[in-house]
Amino acid sequence: MPRKQKATVVALVGAVVLLAGLWLIIRNIGTPTKPLNTLAPFGQQSQDIQNLTIPVFAVAGVIFMLVLVAMIWMVVRFRSPDGAVEGDDEPTQTHGNTPLEIGWTVVPAVLLAVLAILNVQTLLKLDDVGADPLEVTVVGQQWWWEYRYDLDGDQTPEIITATQMAMPAGRDVTVKIQSNDVIHSFWIPALNGKKDAVPGRTHELAFNSDTPGIYEGQCTEFCGLSHGVMRMQIKVLPPEEFDLWTASMLKPPEQPSSAAAARGEALFVGQCARCHEVNGLDPNSTEPYAYAAKPSPNYGAEVDSSLSSKNAPNLTNFMMRQTFAGNLLALWEGDASTAVVAVPGDVPGATPDKVNIKRWLRNPLDVKPMYAENNQGMPNLNLSEDQIDDLTEYLVTLGPTTRPSA
Ligand code: CUA
Image: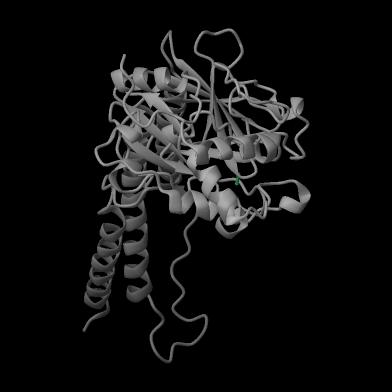
């Protein structure tokens, strides 16, 4: 086969192989097959990123194909023939072809300028929020995420929760990202890009989603032992469900009615309240326990918690969440653990996952690696099985287990 023909055949085969490879890469774009797929947007910001990614990759892909196929063609076409002598058959040397040099300077410059404009446009758009965004302070901790809602703008939060953040669909949300210990990074790929949580700083990130759903996230800055399992969720609720969520979260717990739960309550005050807050309870609380409507924003510092971060998840309306232990364990069985509703206990047949709660209480280190001897994370409290049963009965009373009447 003549050289030229052979080069064309090899280059064409190469092009087909490359196209097949590219197809394997891009065929899943937009398919929500994996929880951390950056190419399946469900928010305004992630859609803006997608709208930038696709044309940039298309342009880069075309250039990649042209360069690679031309290179394959030339390698085969101009290969030294067998038995060639070094130095023989030198190609004609050229220098200073002005139109060619202007061409390969101007074309990439124009291309890069267009891409730069598109990039800057998108970056500016990602920060746009309307006049009245919902503001949520997000605090990275070793190894979980805390959310603080200051609903009345008085600079103190009315709601403090962890792991699962709720937000209304169709409304701008600004999260103010902070850290209590080391650098973390907050990333919910279905809704927006990532932003670092840096001690002593506040970084803002905007969200707006029209699609109710539960979107998964993962800390993406190495932050120590359990970085790899430092997960979180954002639950986007229809606006009226979000109103129900805030109303439910603002309700203080009621006195437990069963004897086991009451024993668990006393145990919570004695053991857990040294780090965990349930609004109104602290290690010095005495019976009958009185609950408060608002959390203390400085709880860990006030009770002199031994934790190095001085902070553990606020458990006031614990059962309003669908997941706990840094999103590693489901808090409800079956559908209630994934239903996109304000009150998981409201889902027909909802049953708290007591097996998971007990597993955590029996030995938290069995679920999530922590450095409890260095006051980072939850220690194994060596509770007896009776204590674990009582504590579980108490914890499942925290938060409405049925839809509260308006
Ligand atoms: Cu927090 Cu990695």
